[in-house]
Length: 632
Image 1 (cartoon, rainbow, N blue to C red):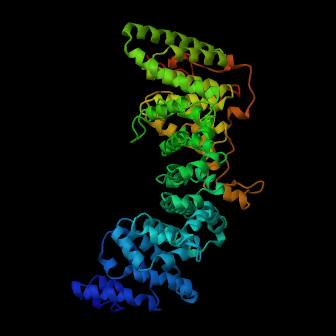
Image 2: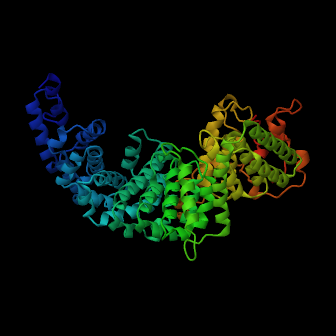
């Protein structure tokens, strides 16, 4: 043993053992340490456990400690904390069950062999006790993480499933985790457990950091619970337990917020459920489920494709198709021209193919759909046929059609500038019927312009439809800034905060990369109008919103902080849906056609000119005073 170890005031301590140069002696010392630690009551035990935690996080695939009994040791320590509250409350032992469960989870997240060893060591029963809430939500978080890793492997899933209550516990935790963290930690700053604060911030402290980390951990608690449930969802025998209406209806709202964007959360679990016919039936009859799937499918959510796949599977199932087809068709028609969405190739072709099958399957008493749905599908099918015809048309004829569409679009711009919004929308529709199908850039503009008209006419659903079509046609998909902004406003008018927030954030990202003078961010400053909408939607989509409302989070008059724990914004965002239609649009719009700069247009006028309230929030805050884009 080296001199540093000889100078240690605690001979034989774990850290001295780790410095042992003789491999055989090191191994025997570590083996003895893991075997003896649970039976010892000496002070300072948390130090070697925290050291093991760091090692497990840094080297989760290293088999050394696995072979020497670390799982048996951690399992015994959790049991000790659960059964001996006097020991748990002594010194800093309160940290030990948390670190022990975390260590188990880290060593089992990558290696199935390690997971098998953990199950053999008996880690599941003490983890289940933590999952029950025998200690606090902090230990529940690491317990559900560890059990989730064990459930992902074919060889260890049965051991998890044999504890029948795990699925029920995970379901309850997924639905209640945010309320638990809010009421037990976030809400009352002066009653927070000190060891929770220390674990959250690693001793850095500070109420603001604690609160921010609490949101992150609450999101993880919810998402890791859903991940554990997802392992059960692949097995048909567990679907009846999963497909209870109370739980299903909550899934689209369990999205984890912006703090855990890498987890598919509720929509990921829904996708797994919809893969099996036993799951599709309950989903198709769950109130509001199809509408929620449609909203996710027509959004800039990273998991948009999962919602699309759910809708397609439900349509392909003859037992569920007739229950939801009329609700799903408008959304899928809007998405029919999407090309590639991430790794998902030719998604639009798949959508059209499924819609055609639904149309062809129509017959007396079979999958009956409304005439409106039939017409929408026929329109998409005809547009595909139109594209084939155009491939054989002479270029001169295509140029004539394109020129004719441009003339009509300019007429629409003129009507828009004069305040005739409905007339402008009609002209953009006419231009779309003339514009060649292959002229995608021009069609993006026409759809986006018509979406703006629908906004001003208080028609948010139609605005979402046209903005979505523009975003699907754009290359890359979901990256047309103006359409993102218009759809963000339309979702705001419908009170769909999450969808509006995601579009608004992506709009800001696109502005930062745009060369368009109307869109580019001067000196990297976020436009005021976009900042206002993002702030509003972040409050409305705040992770703890429902919990705060339930637990009296509404603050009294004069409080500088609102229900969501954020400072109130005096300049409340106002949408067209909250205002009255004005009659003086012609003189007040300051509209420029085709994005051509007008030398007589003072830039600040875009912000200072009074505008009719009906002319949408983006115009009142400076963006959108130029509707049409020059695409030629």
